[in-house]
Length: 395
Image 1 (spheres, one colour):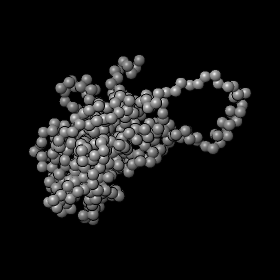
Image 2 (tube, helix red, strand yellow):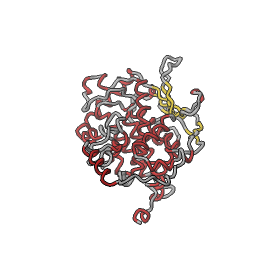
Image 3 (cartoon, helix red, strand yellow):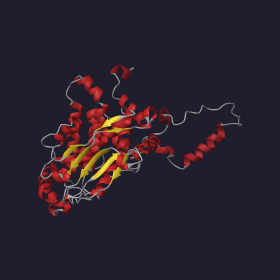
Image 4 (cartoon, one colour):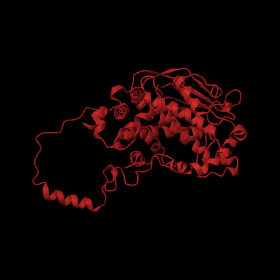
């Protein structure tokens, strides 16, 4: 089964772009068995009834009983089917984020939307993961539309990528970290769970921002694909791609040190980020996004990726750096994705990014789950897939 098929089997109906389709072409286990225990055809039930009648014999009263597992024990996760594990992790992740809608500022502008750490009863006291301030329609028309027009020249070269990325982007990271359903099933389950938590957050922001798509500014944009039925800002593909890149980069960090040394160049992480950037840029090439959508999506994806990894690692307390994206100050920039990465990881303001992104005050995350968290259980199994020695894999 492919990565996309395995993701589809895990994720059910959730998702906009086919990443989370209903059950994949052949279900979770291939063409002969349906997921969630559903039988292939109605005749099988009758056959099983007759089979039981022929083999069970007279009823024998049991003398013992199976041992009862501990309650709320993370190790029980291994006993459940992938779809059940998905529901358990989804429930835990659902409480981690809190959203604050637009509040007009005293200057008459837009004070942005905020995603905060969801712990605590008082929303004003919650740590701010990211705040995004939107651009104006005038700025998009004056500064950003020209980039969309220029990128259209790449449509013939990028068409196969753009069409493939409509139905899933995780596959495009598979050649960087060797993702495969048999070899890295826990990593794929983890990514699927984090994407299910991420997509509602990005869609909530899109709804609140409500910014028109490029084609609404000019019919000459004439996108090469169907324009999605939601706002353009921030880009969902950019958000998801950079979240995936961040998480895989963290899973591969120790492996990268093993290959390139403790102080070695982050070759794997850099390639992950380049892939995420290419996926994001392809949406501008297609004519459905502005470059500023990608920049905001990149910062959102990296920020939520870092937050999710902190939750997955399950430390009782961890310091977290929040960010602000100033959309009104972005103006005529294209997409300085490399400089955004550098600023995000180093917290040193790059000349290309200092006008539109700034660090917030650090705050403390309480992961609230510890060693027994189902999310941490899944993270540790995903992490272990990238830390086996060759001798251990073959023995």
